[in-house]
Length: 316
Ligand code: NAP
Image (cartoon, rainbow, N blue to C red):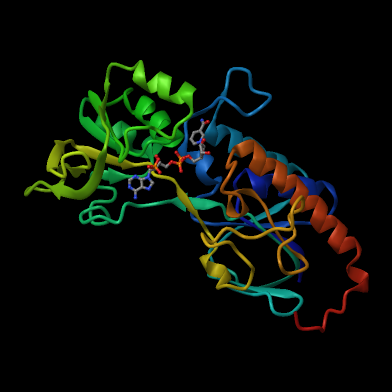
């Protein structure tokens, strides 16, 4: 049985791992299909304190991981298919490891890219449709791209994609952008970026010979449909929390984000803690995720120190 298992390896999980390893709690970190989390799919991180010239997202995550390993955190690859939080110790079913038991659990499974849910989107994923500019931008050298969304992610990715594409069209369903002023300004100053505002995506249109022909959109002012001819479509419309595997065993809000006791990382079950984007849809920054990872480690440490008084046979 493990003392504490951490699920997820974004800034929250890795910060929790650093703190728990330094506190001699021998944390076991289970990393899923996207080790390092969302920051591994981003480019320059300019707002993480301590890096005056910025740092690349993957490098930042790699550094955090090495720091956790240096203090003895153990990393295992796997996908958690089921959890049983109804009795102690908690049981996790992990595809690569079978059943594992733990006294405490830190959930930092983050959030994943949302999709538009329009015809042609899923079928062409990886073949003209992408949710990761950093991963796939390179394939669109000299080509035309559309990016869907009006938030900071869309602005950042549109700007990044101009390094490769001949033209990037931002497709947004409203007139006003949600993005911060600095990110909007940067995108607006870029001559390679065009704007298709008040347009909602309707369909990803394929070429007969394969590949994407364009994005069909509906103009909300005229109600007319039009085709924006592009070779690639990047979807940057936000994220949803990765909490499905919990199967309703923890209290969450209506969007699925885990409820925590205000000012702590304590969930509705004692001994289970949540940190990072899986419990935060307001701030969603690497630094706030790391901060809550530290809180989760300290809350876990306190729980484990007091665990001698816990009745381990009691159903929760
Ligand atoms: P977001 O702020 O939630 O923006 C999502 C955008 O997608 C919105 O403009 C939204 O339109 C649009 N959208 C959502 N669902 C849609 C649909 N079904 N069809 C068409 N459009 C749809 O998400 P985000 O841009 O990923 O940013 C998330 C958080 O990360 C924010 O707090 C952001 O500040 C932060 N972030 C920061 C940086 C940075 O500072 N370097 C970079 C990236 C992200 P509406 O506006 O009409 O709702």
